[in-house]
Image (cartoon, rainbow, N blue to C red; front, side):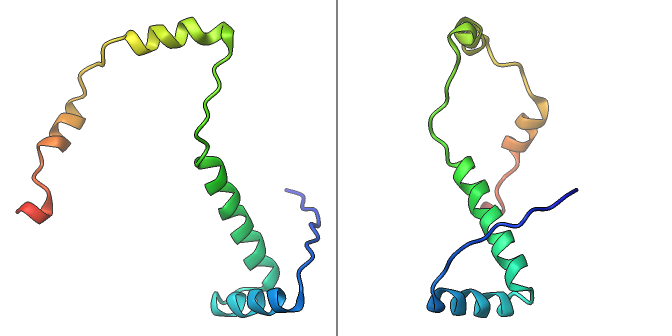
Length: 87
C-alpha cells in the first residue's frame, strides 16, 4: 500500500498539545495525528443521518419494508437471557 503526505498547519499551542498527547499515547506525532484523524473521519461517516434512495430503487425498498420479519431463533434466545444486573 502506498502512502502520501498530508500537510496540516497548526499554531504553536496546538502543536504543543498534539505533541504532549502523542507522548502520552506512546506514539509519534505523525502516527497520533493520522490515527485520530481517521477515527474522527469514521465517526463523522457513521453519524450520517440522511439516507438517499435512488428513485429506481424506491419500489424495491418499499417492498423490503413491507416484507414480514423472518423468525430468528438466536435473537429469541438472546432476548430470553436475563440481564446480569437482574440475576
